[in-house]
Image (tube, rainbow, N blue to C red):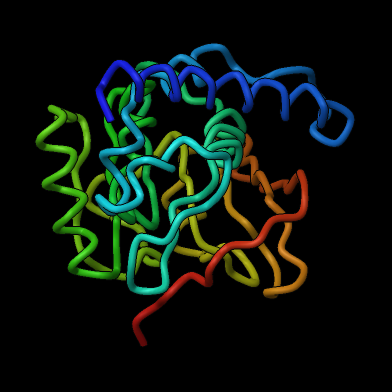
Length: 222
């Protein structure tokens, strides 16, 4: 498939995302997604962040397997989580769960720096290669237990966790800057809720539940 054909599919993907957001405006509590987020989704070539044999379906609005029992989330969920993060150009973001690097690439279009932690060594290596080929120099990746964050670069203006847990890891809450937001799915396998945790200037935390989702579990190292 030629690049111009893939670009058309990418534009169509963004149109579908926008339609979903409009249809779910009551559940989301707002109409539409941030235009900067949609523009970033249109710029980042998603087909470079899936296995080669799945490149032709990279722009379908559904999750795709990337190996090691992991998936790349459906485009609408990627866009929604990015929108909920409310990223600003001068901010530093921590991502937990790099996968093959797609979400990090989207975030890098919107913020000053992205630090991403991936527990699967093979995925982390692949993500680094794919991001490097696309010139995404604002992303740094390390292999490790994402529930512990990346203390060396803390505090973070925003934190995104692309795997589910019963509760947000304390290390991540500690590494979140006052005034920041953390976005992640919370709950058991059958009842996860995409949640935004706001940390006010005094360090008080408040959670906002957005909508039901289904993510793989956050892996940790004992």
